[in-house]
Image (cartoon, rainbow, N blue to C red; front, top):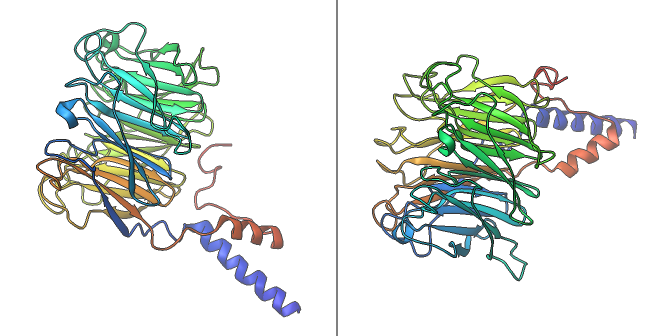
Length: 433
């Protein structure tokens, strides 16, 4: 009996140790499915934007319907298209679907349209609960309290709990972000950075995790002309947001455009710099930050593509989920000129897990022109794929054939044997304590 117990403890220790070093499933993402719109036509550019929460996927096609735009909602489990969203006031050139965000039963869609002037912009809140009698209904249309031409309100959107934020990088010259209550559609606040200046494009990208928001300002000049920056805000009281910190790359330089993409998951944020020289001249980079203490964030890693080349725009699109980051490089030439690529990284180590390319990759597809990840599933857009006509667009879903380790099994082992786990890079190493 003692031998059996000792052997069981030994096996459990090996299992926990192996899980703590790296997820067994993280490096696979080897199963591929291609998603297309049911009414796809030439020039739609399906896949220009993505939102994904693990069960539902939203895909933007802002040039569909004479550029009025459409958004498609998919059931990820069945790969089936559930419905098509359009704005109640849809009009030519509205570009509904420019940006997307999804959480729980609410979704928000940006439309850089012409209300009340060219490029003023709008955003729309929808019910996306498949079990709700109002599934697919538009709940509210959002506009800024001070709309003006070329505000580009709706260029970026994010949602968390009962709060939504909408970026307007052209507002007032320097850019603004508007905070809304999703239950009423009421505007609660207008955010600006503490030091933003004309042309900064504050709000060009936004993301939220809980009450923490990260806002990109890709043309901020603190690290050099157009070096870029990102701002952290506490939205615990959405009617009175507080700027906590400003993020600058440790090796900031002019023209990098750090902050043109941002994403956040739990205690980790990722910021893209599409024209950074990290791997090759203007090949692009992405930076990981520990934001456990957002008042004292720590830069963890600088991610670059192993096959970086001139103007790949690696980092133009980023997403993060738990310990995995996904970075797009739409102008990578791996399988043809501008065929595009996407890259999966282990957040805890900064190591490349896998480079993604679709099985039918072709020149000019710009695979990697949008990215989203949740758990062991990744979505990558190829807005110039010609599946249903020239530049009709497609989205590829990648998942792992090796199942994610059961957290229940791990918890049981820990409970039975008193075993703990450690990360390859601990919170202490991240400067979080």
